[in-house]
Image (cartoon, rainbow, N blue to C red; front, side):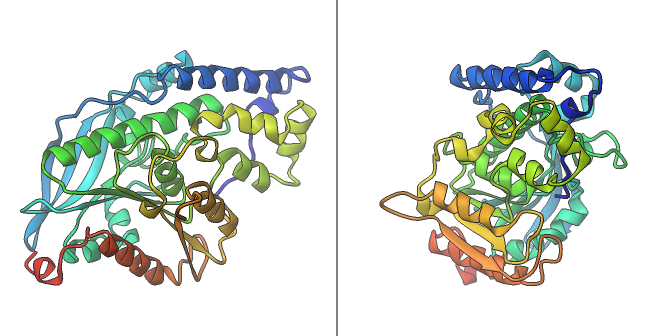
Length: 343
């Protein structure tokens, strides 16, 4: 996820000093109240999945599935955005599915991703399929088929807390709905993983409820506002933000409702594996360490595994996937070798 600090509120030249900071404070109060009322993360109903067969796989098939996103916007600004971008009201995913029910690995892409053919390769989906798991590759809000155009730059996430808070809430809503549909088919386990933006979304979902049996964030960031702020160091945009009276605590507070480190973990530490790249300059490894620590307690600690390489040049990512396989196998979610060979 390439980032830079480009705050719309900071760039409104006509706004007086303190106006931008006030808008951020208003967003902080608005979404804190919505979360406290249970409005931000309402439980979805189980959706009806529409399936289209893409190709045959040994022992199964690759399907494209879609379902209605029933997320209800809280802020009128986000409601207007959804009205303008109708493509985002339908959720999409590629599903590599065995003929018989299997544990499912749900894989979330990074910023600008969401095209199934690319994500299949990024997550070595065929490798997991041969190991005996189903693999589902959803598109996050305003990405892939949900963008309305493959040429459209994703508008989510954003320095605008309305777009980001509700975009993440919609993402979690749609993923919970997907998990309900997978379990209705008989999936014995549904595990969530993701890279970068997908890793953050995975982490957030693990603070909402226990929809997923485990969370495996890979090269994640722990705080969107802090990531944006840090990458904006020394830029004119951040200087303008500071001139508007915006500091990091004010910026972070506006996103707190969907910031995992400000929320209570809902998964046991033994159900969390965090994967970090040693040379990652986009989402530095300390983000992964903070997530590991947040999901640990006095009784048990979440796992943290580091691999060689950087954010995009993941030269050691094979080690990361093997660590995932050991983690999944340790929980009994990887079928036996005999079963997997029969796939």
